[in-house]
Image (cartoon, rainbow, N blue to C red):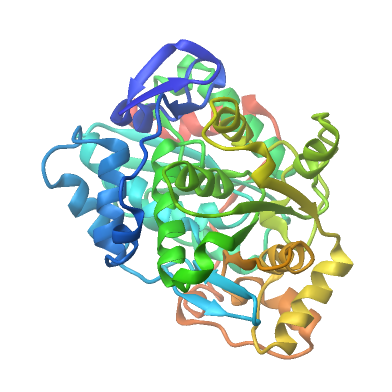
Length: 430
């Protein structure tokens, strides 16, 4: 597999190199130079999830990881289900929260950890990543206990749910957490600055586990095929997929799946009040505003990192821009959607509710809809209980950490402060 830096066409790498580096020169994203088309999608959809995912990833990545290695990675990473549930007569949901941290990012996080553990050959690596909620837990759990890999997770202090924070800030060991006194965009900016600093990038063998890392993105392609495999055959060609969107890695993966031949009719990019992309799709002007804090905090991103990859898919002719619409949902209608879902017998959290709201008001005659359920509602227990007026129980994964103390260190949003902290923390790795 060959990938090119979207900011520097002279910077081309293999899959393994892209996974190790994370970002390219000038903070550029790596993207495949070509996206292969699958020849028999119908037969592929008839296969079991793991077997199908191995075939999809072999098609994308090729044989560079060695015979049988990719198969083992997928078998170990994708060892939980992604069921489709019917919510209304015309709308389904894909539940992506049945992994160890109860969020869709378990797929990408676990796949990346398995890949990196094998290609690093025991060499020391520092994972630096920012999280608006679920990435932190997925990455922390996936890498926890891997001896040669340290993980540093930045998150916006006070802007993620307490249970989200507990899932990654209580582990200790090789997992180091930092509460930044700013928003998620500031956390992302600090990560990018670190990759531009040779002292940190080279001295600590830096890598990123955000969705900017191509391994996470490719892993997510697989569950779109899993979703279609559970939709009645007669409905597949008319399926509209609504994706709750923050950093836009999830939507990018879905569009790669479509480019490979998956018969999704079109997509809805569903955002909260941080509506940079919906406004851009309507006006053609890229005009990020200041990030607004919402109850769907994992989507509180005003400058989504993955958007250049979607632009590349459109510009290179893999995707018709007409198959993508953007919808923004405010706080009031997010809560209304949560109540509507509850009335239909389905308990959901704010992010999925936004995708449902966007879908239920955006379906045309003859279309069927699928929205992505990206996190277990208990991860947003306080919000869900307040909106629905009824208690929800904690699954064992959350109950186990609910009373644990956070080990996070508070830092101001200063790159010099972060650099000093990381060098002091991880100097033995240099």
